[in-house]
Length: 323
Image (cartoon, rainbow, N blue to C red; front, side, top):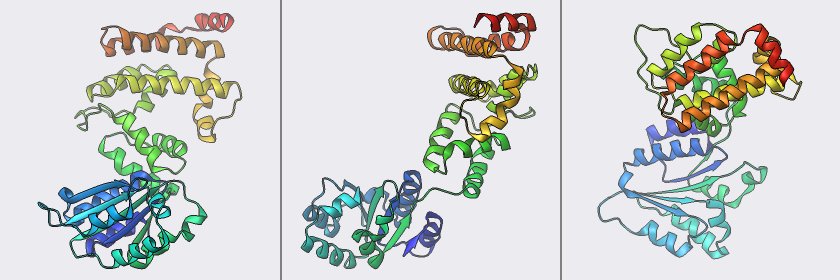
């Protein structure tokens, strides 16, 4: 039977299957489901992991029927499973089915195929074979409701949850949990889970918005993010990308509908020359952060002081003429 990762997790609580095929484009979902399966089998020390492109049927058979010396239970994982199956001869494919049907009670076999879903997958002989003797788990991209629920659980833990932040991540993900995990990993690097008690929580996106709209509250947001161990380099990348997107909106270039709505106000607030000047100051901050011993907090405070207090109308008009 073909299951979603969520239904597969429910199945594990009842009876862990002995033969499983994970396939689809979402490797992060496969990884989590595989780890849950290994834990359900209590076989963390009995995992045998192989590349399907290099695995012969003879070697596979030996691994399946052999016993491990120090672990009674065993999980044999074959990655690039379709390549493995494609390389089998006709009699070996028949032998594979017999082997999977005759597994002893201490052995689990897992096939993993991580690639874009194609309609031909449903007709693939290996999918049919595993469907006959075990469980097939389709790891597809999520819909917006699933992604929002997943993001809320993640971001609430770090005190970073806000709707605009979620809108941004949903927009850039394209429904991919893999993309979301990579973006969150960049976001949360060096970020302390313990929020500062008694203070207002700020997201990095709030800091960017406060600074661009000239609010001195941006300094409070900066203090909060630094006190929680937030990465100054990620903040730099976020600020640079935001300014570049504002320039794109200003020039009428193609951007996502969400970005256009979110940044329209800033595009009206600044001239193109001002935006280029801000971007230049951000490059200066990047140089200081990466090549000098100046504390990152001081670098950011200098930049915010320039953006909020020094970029006066006269200087802005001049900047517009220069660029």
